[in-house]
Length: 193
Image 1 (cartoon, rainbow, N blue to C red):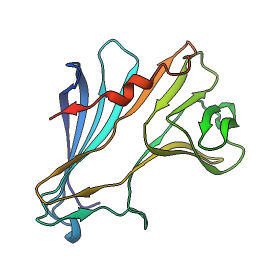
Image 2 (cartoon, rainbow, N blue to C red):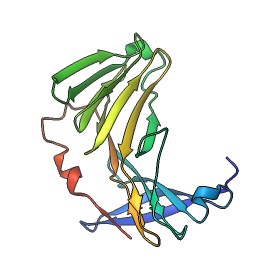
Image 3 (cartoon, rainbow, N blue to C red):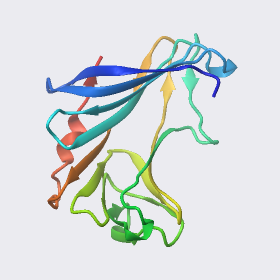
Image 4 (spheres, rainbow, N blue to C red):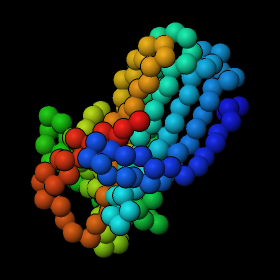
């Protein structure tokens, strides 16, 4: 909480030569003893003209030692995205594949639960648009009577002087239903630095 945050506009090229534009938030750790010298960069990017938002982070280890980040007792770093799909949470519906279980549907706002999803979650409310979340890794939906969040976890172990770039999370807003596999190509997108 004592660290200084800087924000600015940025452009980042992906491995397919697309130029993504958006915001970059920088946190240079100067106060926290165990992470002093570390740098975090958080990106929130779009492809101009497309209803896609991508978010990811970079951890730049300038602490002088190997770092394995631990969040709440787990050897993972997380990104939690709170979703405001409708004014009334009970109007929100979730559809996803739950690993080792199969297709699953859930109404938000009625019970508290954390449920994993396999790469894609579809979230709808009272609007014509549907929100699709794509992430190729450890993830789950955190559904309570008060909020809905997508939580993404990723193991982080970084040698001194090295950088870790997280897998991107993609959010697609569309009025059309997307067929199975429509978002699979997102798995191949890497950002170049």
